[in-house]
Every structure is written in C-alpha cells, then in structure tokens.
View 1 (cartoon, rainbow, N blue to C red):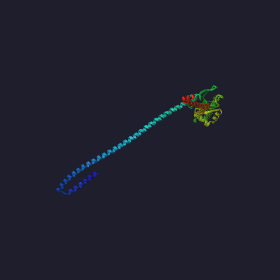
View 2 (cartoon, helix red, strand yellow; view 1 turned 60 degrees about the horizontal axis):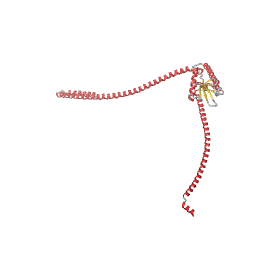
View 3 (tube, rainbow, N blue to C red; view 1 turned 120 degrees about the horizontal axis):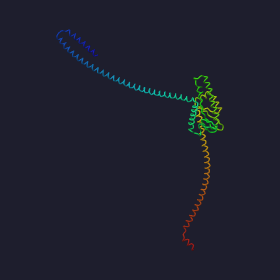
View 4 (tube, helix red, strand yellow; view 1 turned 30 degrees about the vertical axis):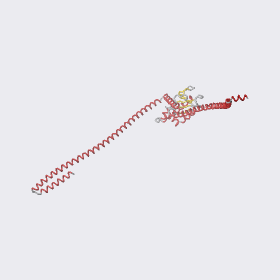
Amino acid sequence: MEYIVISLLVINLLILLVILFKGTNSDTIEKMGRLETNIVKEFGDFKNDLTRSLNEDFIKLNDGLENRLRHINDAVNERLDENFDKTNKTFTNVLERLSKIDEAQKKIDTLSSDIVSLQSILTDKKTRGIYGEVNLKNIMENVFGENNKTIYQLQYGLSNGTIVDCALFAPEPLGLIGIDSKFPLENYTKMVDRTLSNSTRIEATKLFKSDVKKHIDAIASKYIIPGVTSDQAILFLPAEAIFAEINAYHTDLIEYAYKKRVWLTSPTTLISTLTTIQVILMNLERDKYAKVIHDELKLLDVEFKRYKDRWDKLSRSIESVGKDVKELHTTSEKITKRFDSINHVEIDSLTYTEKE
C-alpha cells in the first residue's frame, strides 16, 4: 500500500514539473527551486514516516509471528508429551504382556515336561499301582480324616492271607468292604488312539475288556469272603476317562461286574459313595447316643418316682408333727394360764378364810 502512495506522489511531481517547465521566466525557475526543495523535504519526511511505519508494522508482525510460533510450539510440545506418555504406557503394557506371555510359555513348557514325565511314569505297571493306591489314600483321608482306623485301614490283611488296598468298616449289614485300586491303561491308550489303524484299535478294545474282567474276577475271589467281609467289593479306577469310557461304550463290563458283586468307581463316584456311608455312620452314631439318652431318661423317671414317694412320706410326717406341735402348743397355753392364775392368788384372804 505504501509503495502505491509513493508511486502516485512521484507521478504527481512529474506532472507538476511538466506544467512548470512550460514557463521559462526566472520566477518560475525560482518557484521550481523552492518547490523542489519543499518536495524533497516532504519526500524526506514522508520517507521517514513511511520507514517508521514500516518498522513498527514489521515489529508488530514479528511479535505476532513469534507469539503464534510460541503458541504453536507449546501446543506441539504438549501434544508430543501427551503422545509420549501414551506411547510409554503402551510400551510398558506391551512389555508386561510379553513378560506374562513368556511366563505362561515357561509354565506350558514345564507342564509339557510334567505330562511327558507322568506318561513315562504311568507306562510302568508297578508305578501305576502306586499311583492308584496314593490316590485312594488321599480320598479316604479327605472323607474320613487321616488314620481313622475305626472306619478304614489301608493295606489291610484278610483272613485268607490276601492284602486289600483299603478295608472300609461299614455299618451292618454291610460290614467290611474291600476297596482295591486297578489301572488298566496300556490297552485303553491304544483303544482310544485315533492315529492307529482300525484293526489295532479293535484288538486293543478286546484286550482292554479282558483286562477289566480279570481285575473284577481277582477282586471277587480275593476280597469277598463269606462270614468275614461283605458280599460285595469295590474296584477303584484312578482315571475318570477310563470309568467314563466303560460306562459309555462298554455296558457289558458293568453287567459283568454287577454279577460278580463288584462295583466300579472313579475318584468322583468313590467320594460320593464314601460320603453316603459317612452320613449313615453319623446317623447310626446319633441313634446310638439317642438310645443312651432314652435309657438314662428311663432311669431318671424311676428315680423321680422314688423321690416323689419319699417326698410324700416326708410330707405326711411333717403334717403329723405339725399336728402334734399344734396340740402341744395348746397344752402349753393351758399350763401357762394355770400358772398365771396361781401367781395372782392373794395369800391373806386365803388364810382368813381358813380361820373362819
């Protein structure tokens, strides 16, 4: 805008000079000199004012730009700080999750090694037997308490020379019930392995059923003794999967065991059975104490009747004594009155009367 004004002033000055140059007299030249001087002075003043105005505008513009840039810089720094905090938190969360994933992976690796170790342990027949016995021991202790020999005993010797894994002393008419742990795992593993051929699995199924029947026969012949034990026994399968397989797909084994009076149980069903027996034992114990209380109440009734008879006798005796005391009190009153009348008799008047 200021450059346009300057251009206009220069043009006006040139027009004025042209007009002035049309006259050639000395006055005109003098006037032009004075005019030139004035124009130069005004132009200098205008230049100074324009320079001052431009400087002020530049300073204002510079200040405005600096303030704007400062504001933008502050906003950018604030946004960067905020984004940095979010990024830092995200990075921290990622690190935490990675550490948890790493920890979980370690647990999975440990669990995998434990499973492999367990599989290697269970491949040995003797070790499987120990595993089943330990599992049975833990169940008995959880239900009846540790070393509760009045209800159960582990590795109990029977009269026929055999030793049962656990003898349960159930209330009559059940009596002693033998519980033996069996773990038919080898042929079961082949039977359920889908990677094997169909013929191999069918053969493994036959062998598995044969193994279970052998266990049932052994328990029926060893641990059911007439007159010594109950007429039934329990076969404990430590694996729920084997028990479920038999109940779902091999009901003929259930019927075979039923005929032999041997009941198949898993950890879950054995706990349910033992809990039922525990409730029966508690009820019997409660009934026994109830009978004792009833007998004591009968004896107390006899003693109370005897006490009542004696109290009646004492009451009659007390009534008789009370009657005697009352009669004695009457006699005492009469004697007292006699003494009083004697004490009030006048001796002089009595003497005079005798003389006359």
